[in-house]
Amino acid sequence: MHLHRAILVDDELFTRKGLIKLIDWEDCGFEIAGEADNGEDALALIERVQPQLVITDIRMPVIDGLELIRRVTTENNMKPAFVIISGYNDFNYAQQAMRYGVQDFVVKPIDEIEFTSILKKLNEKLNAEQEEQTKKERRIGSEMIKSLILGEASEASIAGWERRLQLKKTDFLIYMFAELNDNHRLDPSTGQIPNARFMELVQQELMRITAASQPVNLYEHRNRIGILLPGFLLEPFNGELERFLAKFRAALDIHFGKSVFLYAGSPVYGLAHIRDSYKAAKDALLYKYTNDERIVVYEQIQSEQLNYIGFEPVQFNQFMEHFEELKLDVVKTAVEQWFLDFREKRYAPEAVKMNIQQCVMGIMKTIRSMEGDEQSLSTLKPLLNWQDINLSLGELKNMFSAFIEESGLLVAELRKEQQKGGIQKIKSYIEMNYSQNMSLKSIAAQFYVNPVYLGQLFKKTYGVYFNEFLLQLRVNEAKKLLRQSCAMRVYEIAEKVGFSNADYFVTQFEKIEHMTPTEYRNQLP
Image (cartoon, rainbow, N blue to C red; front, side):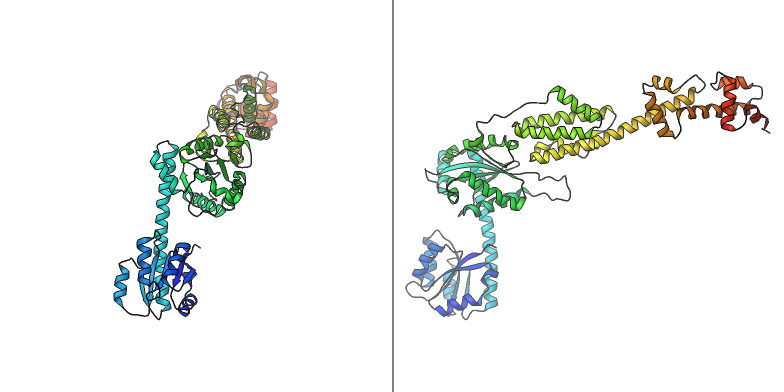
């Protein structure tokens, strides 16, 4: 918890020590940062400690409380809050003190409840003022960075900002990016971290590990945080950028796991040149997928060549063939190798995007050709828009693999539906043309299907073999003719239902009905 610094000024030691013991200062939001027994010593203490609150008596030797307040409020840049304590119930003092902006006036002996209430209200006020000042400083810092990287800053404003940052001519500056990856809502069980929270923790850890006395200037880019890093903040790391980045990454990992990437531009001297460091940091972004350290320093990679190559046609066609054959284990192995190549062969993000999209479009085309709807795939939209969010190479591989798996399930289902639709067409054809001379082989040839496969599919779908189905169909129709026409001869019925041999017809009829066609007719009433 952040505590505001407070000092006690009173010429009575007993009063100061008693007040320290009487109040739960931490609970009120304060810590005692020093004591003084007269106004003159208090002035030096205020200059050194820079407190947010001064609690002072009115009557003291050398410089009294009112003169102390007057000097601090009119002559110093520091503007602490003041609370007056006095053994004199003299409201003239209070009125005079209020002109200097004194927060409150407390009469001795001090009431613990009353004084605690005053401190807690003051703590709330100071917190609100501090938050507003932080927001103001952040806005000013963001405006400064934006103006600098766009090349719109005037020489006068640059000089003013350098004074504000307390930069020396020998101080170098580095522009860098902190990027939070894999922070998407594809998994409802994990909450998405707001950009404001990421920015807040980046600031917090920067100040902590560098022991910065004031907030570091940050700028919120579209999907990452820009950091204007003065070189003097690297002093705890002996000026070594790599040591600082490793420490910074480890600090952020505590909050976000291993999902933060850092990209550092080249060092420059003077704010007027920070745009060059910003451009170098942007170039460093292109090397995101070339290593697994999650730290890219432009000075170390600027001579490395990136690759912008696509899949060979044979390689892509083989991938699609294996996918359409639903050999997903083979496809998975190919994807694993591709992602190894992306890293080891230093693929630029655009090249990774191009190759991923080629595969996605190929799979979408296959689904459409099978009269499927690719929009039904829950994994499609994130994969089409993956460059709009920050993804690590590992998470991109997971997303792509999930898309392939879901697409494979859809293709398998579409194939089943097509097979079902195809066998239904074949069954309808048999039912309409059963009287013609047909066989499994002739039907298979007519519908461009392998006869063995057709026989298996027919049995799987309808529970009977093709020949059994055709025979039953012909016998049922023969029975119908035997019932409806007494004039038709058995051989005529045989021919009409598709038997070229009457004796064979009688044999097959008897096999199914356990009586001859004539016996069947004769037993009708």
